[in-house]
Length: 177
Length: 100
Image (cartoon, rainbow over all chains, first blue to last red; front, side, top):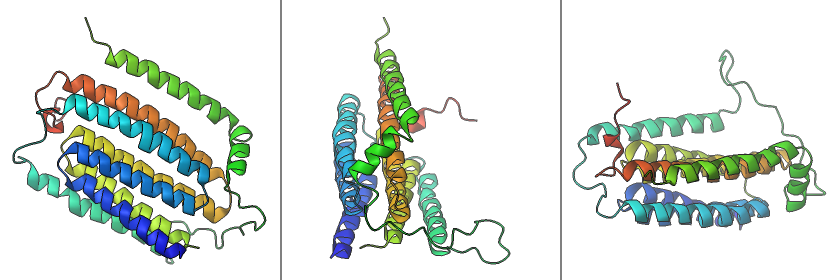
């Protein structure tokens, strides 16, 4: 059952990612990206990360994508990437490159144990620490506790980052007289 | 229960697609959206790792990634808007001043 749900969500995620890549119209791409983010939020739910699923929908699919759509509407009218691409052969070189990257990532996943004599890829820990059966250590409660104890300083520094970004954007967006 | 390797495999596929979008597309906004796609793939892998080790640390990290991504999108879009307000065409090929 869970496997079927995973397969469905994964299909939607990969399909919408392909849609983002293949559609020429950036607005369509943005909408495909929203679908993709929603599918990833569903996967978070399946992994028991409810808070992240909510944050994903609110922050990513909500706020960030609205920002994207606004930028597209400000910038695009009449200036799409039209016409034949003068550098098409070079750009299509990216397809085998991305395939190579995918092969590497797949190799990291499949070859868990480094073969004897290979200096790269240190062998991972033989067995993952057993998951505590009592409390699923990924719920909102555990997350909040971690955030306000062990990660308190980074959590507070996040606000400084956001403030700096806000001030920087105001500065950049100001029309110079 | 889905094995976490499946999540990691999906994350790898999505990350590769994001990188492909960055390389292949010409529109800076679509390139930026592809970067978001790759960031999300990394987040998925982080949550899967957290699930595997039974700790909430991975989710905390994802939360920070989300905050930094929000800041990055705001600044990046402001830069793109500021650059392309002055230009005719919306293509990264025109921004070749720093190329050797």
